[in-house]
Amino acid sequence: MRLGRRKSGDAEAPARRRQASDEQVRPSAEDLSNRYAFRRNRTLTGSSSAQVASSNELNAELRSPRAHVHHLTALRRRLLATFIGVAFVALGLYLLLSQLVASATIQMAKIGVLPNDDQAAYHEALDSYYGARPAERLRFLLNEQALLAHLQASRPEIKSVRIEPGDGIGNASVTLVSRQPIARWNLSGSNQYVDSDGIVFARNYYSDPGLQIVDNSGIQASSNRLVASNRFLGFVGRVIAKSSANGLSVETVTIPTLTTRQIVLTLKGKKTQYKLSVDRSAGQQVEDIVHIDRYLAAKGLTPGYVDVRISGKAFYK
View 1: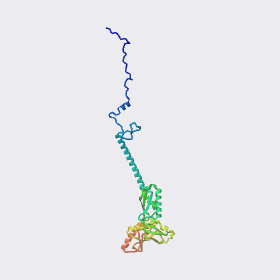
View 2 (view 1 turned 90 degrees about the vertical axis):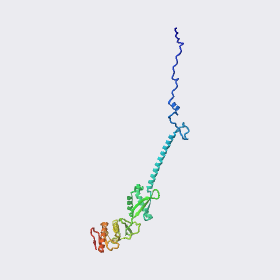
View 3 (view 1 turned 135 degrees about the horizontal axis):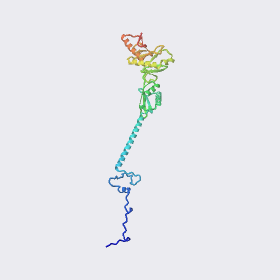
View 4 (view 1 turned 135 degrees about the vertical axis):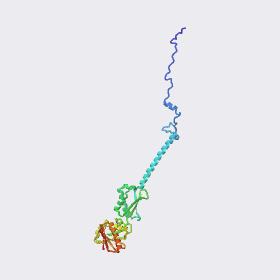
């Protein structure tokens, strides 16, 4: 039986193809991130700070407890480093200020309080030194030998100087040691002194020595300054000091008549006079006197004078 062909009009319409618009729209990455915000292996953020009111608050800083601990640890380290730095700076400033000599208190060892005139003179000499070398106001930079030489140039009676910390910051205690004279010479109404090193000075803080140089040269007072030169008085001081070091005690020192380059000395308990020359070494002449004194004592001789002015020879009478 032949089946009849369907008419085109009666045929069923084909099924409509699916359109892209009918499919479900694929979610974006932001939607997925929001949808799966609390899935496994994801870090949960939050804050234990009462100052953060909401996670949507502007400029809010949300930290986990671990991050919060790390933040506090780093902050503590920064504060500790800052404190240590400030402490070191403060310590350095304190050390510098403790070494600074902004003002000085001057005193003389074994003497006590100095007269005002001497205080002013020593302060002026000290200030002039620091004025030329301001960096040496820090005690660890001080050249003590240069300072001593500077002070002795105007104040030769100073033998040594010592600078120590004072009562307050910036204050220093300056202790001066004065020369002790072993002989004196009265020159035009004022005394000149000489110590064991042969240094001549005019300001004496000790008692006047018993040994006085007697001037029998007969030279007029106007020429006395030539006779009482530093070289001459220094020679006398060295002779006395070396004699004492060799066990001899000088009793008198005299300048003979019509001479300015010789001296005559006598020893305690001895009548013999020894003639010495300024042009020959004081040490060599004292050595000759020591040997001659022993020789005379051994022979029982007591000459009136012994001349040791010539090296290697001695004349006595």
